[in-house]
Amino acid sequence: MNAILVAVTTTFDKYDVEYSLDELANLALAAEIKPVFKIAQKLNSPNAKTYVGKGKLTEIAIAITAYKADIVIFNDELTPSQLRNTATELNINCIDRSYLILQIFEKRAATKQANLEIKLAKNLYLLPRIAFLREQESRSGGATGALSSKGAGETQAELDRRHLMAEINHLRKELKNMQAMKEQQILKRQKNAIPIVALVGYTNAGKSSTMNTILNYIAKEDKAVYVKDQLFATLATYNRQINYDKKEFILVDTIGFVSKLPHNLINSFQQTLAEIKNADYIIHVVDSSSKYINEQLNVVLDVLKALNANQIPSLFLLNKWDKTIDNNMHILGYESLTFSNKTQLHVPELLDTILTHIGPSTIRTKLLIPYSLGKLSHILETIAYIYQKEYQNYGTYYDVEIPIKDYAKFQKYDLDNLIN
Image 1 (cartoon, rainbow, N blue to C red):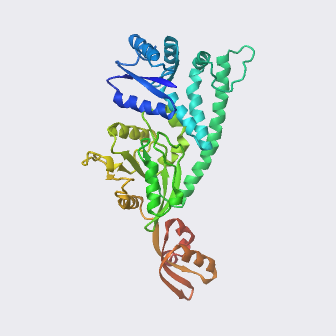
Image 2: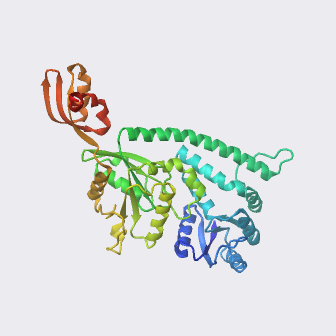
Image 3: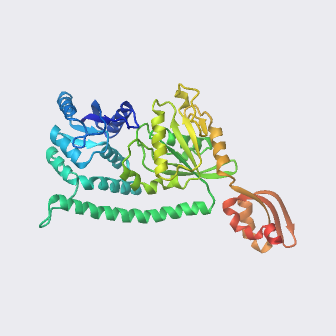
């Protein structure tokens, strides 16, 4: 399928139009659509009726014929009327950036949670556009899905909306139940005092590769996560428990971000993104070799702000340093570290930085455990580093270092508590 890509740029636009169209082209390729021509127009604001001006519509129509295009993809989320008017004027299927991203997400979803979240986001997007999609189906001879035949007194659009609303309510209910389970898992980790470190970043910046580099460094190759050089290679979050230098933490690899993410998608992915909101430390993986590094940084920072996660302590990891031309690059006002998964540059330094920020995961204490609690003594000796052990009149004395998450089991036998 061949596509014409169309963008409008304004004086208020955050993104360089060349960068934005290049990214739209990569998104199209990820959806197995071939970009054949790009068209941009500078306006004070997008045309309220047709997104671009009348003259540019004529130019697009010529390009459709010249390049034998099957579809036109617009670089912003269009209103239902803009989609309808452009499709009518051009007599071709038209979609916008939001719908394209939703299609990619739908294709890549591999877990039940991701499938539900994407389906909810897509249905919310479709709800105000269902009449237009019916018209577009008639134009292409296709069909969007299983919608039942209309009842007495109902138009097809009304029936479609009713069907979508019922499905939206059902999806929200399912996701709410899953959210309760997710919150219990997070609370359990917090209760056990296991810090959470989240990897975030622009799609294809190297988050999953960074997780695998860390896992390989601590000899856990069998726990590696899926990596592929493409946008949104995976939509799942991966959790791995890391034990390093007598400390432990949960390392979380999250989905990548991209500019102009649909709002419905961010809202629907609240469960998947909950790992970021509950993190103790964030590793912001940056592709330092990208000529659009500033745009990508701003996208991720905007999403973190939308998640109320922008106040969490963070490290900017300048990844792909082996490809970087500017060796003086740094993120002004933020802690940063140069890094390369390919050359293994600064892997130990990354781990040391994480340990410095997550705080201690062990506690040194002096315990006196009664002889009658031999099972408890056995558990202690299994998990603790023992500095001293003595058999005394009232029980076994220990000077030990134990994980904070296990301290509650032994707290009543802490000598400080016994003396007080």
